[in-house]
Image 1 (cartoon, rainbow, N blue to C red):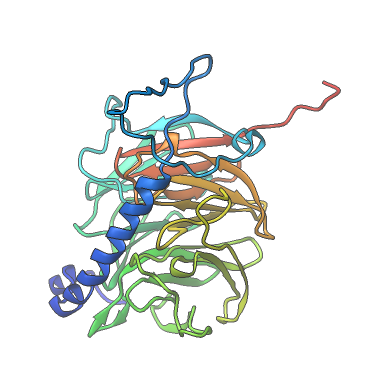
Image 2: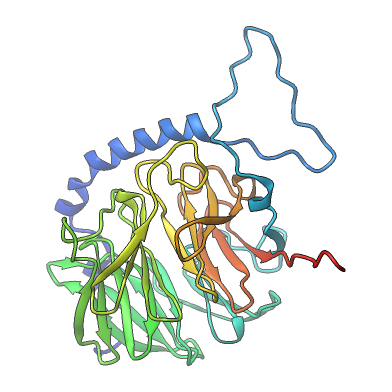
Length: 356
């Protein structure tokens, strides 16, 4: 590990790297806008109400073509049970909401407004502290320490919010775009969206290897410049491969073990747009939760890749390009909408026995 000192030059991407992405970003943005306009669904009407009637006036624009909605059995498996950090709450995020994670005792750790806030499972604020500007993601270790990621660096904080140093990530000439961090046993795994791989480090900051380079392209395909991953209870790494519209599976030594998902514009279990799913989390029982942009929605798949639940776009801002995800020990799906700057908790619905 190095000292607490950081290099201010890592706060901005090199001009040559930034400029090289401008044409691609423009193309991807145009495509995303086109698909969004054609697929975006309208919010579902409230119970007991009907949606607006369609006018036959020739001057009235035709409604957008909506993607097929899943059966009610998929939509009814989770329900919204709590919302944190609303504008009217005691602790709103005023400028940004960048990431969330779950720590010991199912505490909810939030990154926004250049600070970390920790809430207990019931939504009560426990503590908060400032972090440096440009921090993009966070992870809470089993010992309560917090790991934050920024361009080319991971910083570590103790339970009191005191910076305990950290480590540089990636090549000094090409600093890592750190977009996700996970702690697994004695290792720190770091998603690098610049190199399009996942780095493995030990607790001393020594590089142990990479995940994601054993495929035809030698890396993940990330047109959106974002890489997310999680680890299940058996040590399988689940990662987003957005350009391929897949969730990919790996073991720790970097060997690929499987994948699921495909591009599609009508089947709600498929992934739309130029690059989805964007975010991902794993439930305690091994199901995989994904979040998409273009149609801002969340889906749950079983380990075989079959969709088993769906949280629709009526719950999120339609302009949301990231729905950050976490799952706690009770199986609650915790989402962070950075456009509305709110955290929403969706609880699994317990099915009643027919005999009850």
